[in-house]
Length: 502
Image 1 (cartoon, helix red, strand yellow):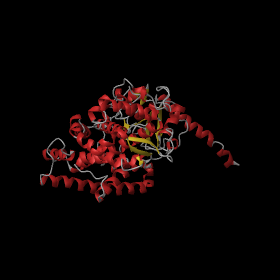
Image 2 (cartoon, rainbow, N blue to C red):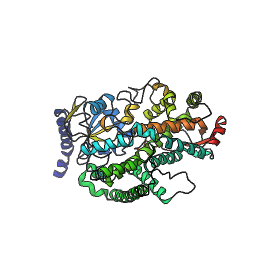
Image 3 (cartoon, helix red, strand yellow):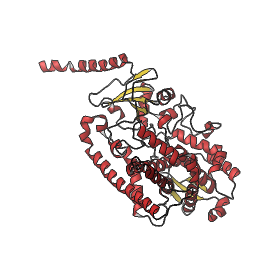
Image 4 (tube, rainbow, N blue to C red):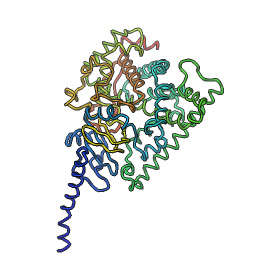
């Protein structure tokens, strides 16, 4: 009986424990938190799926600014434009760091030294400068426009020989070719035979994307790191394969320099520019630094653009009146005697509206790449301690009916008269502030050219067995479609002669 009487006190003790945690949070002026806090794991039980819908439902129930404990990791979850502005404008410098001591940072991020994973400081600033000035500046992208145009001509010719097309697969090969040609001066896909190197390169990019969704409990609960042994083994195997591939690709570029087999005109591969920087400062521009930049560009550009374009085509096939409207715009401006070119994109506002609306409904990542605060700050009137992990649920913000009229309906017209794709902080698919995506300009060019070229040249409709994908299905971390888009295509009658000539 005595044992039973002691058990009766357990619910009371638990209630007192939870009440103490919440009272402490209020006294410290922290944002609101879910009531149930479990020792050791904190609020991890609420985000077990790890997708944006789970976090959105949590914010809908408890508020747009939440303070969570994912294990021992203090986490700020933001789902409103005003709070996002506090983080990325008012406190931009405070939130410039990345989380450290994660398996992803250790293996994918070159020990937290890559552009994506490095915390704010001289090293990161230099990497950012290399990416934005030497590799992804407007001048550099303009100089490599011929590569993108050539790959799109090859894509059109390839698709014209098909009937039912898995759009994501074909677009992925094209965007990957664009990046390999811009980086190394080589195309690997869409050829009659696929080399071993091409297979390894694609496997590397695909595995990098898969690793994003890998759950690592030790990142949040360090005492449970031993449970991540399978994940760590997979990360280690990935790193070994990646490093062998990067070394091989770099050696090829060095050999080309020795043999004077490098194009010295405006289409010089990006890696050759990095090797020139290495000649001037070998101590800083070590191979490992160049490898990390190569890997970031290969992974980010090809996968991001492919996902957005697949969603765009899916939405257009489900809204044929919008597809006809943008095709008419392209026909009126470009005509039938030539293919669309990058300068044309500035004169095709409705095409840009379609890209913007797709980015709004399906941003490249549902939550912006996580930030971490370096000092204490204030967000939405709440005190945020130093070392707090920041998650901005951009998918929730960009699909919130409080900020968007009928947000689940595909309406490109909502962006007419809007320059660019940022509307305050309620629309920022590539992030904002110092840590915004440096590849944004390239992504917009590639998306505009792929979308415009295929609309101009092909008649498309959804294959009979490929049903409409509801946008509410958002199970993926990287916003890939739950079901691949399969389209039935044929050349447009008015474009057949031109297609045969390209």
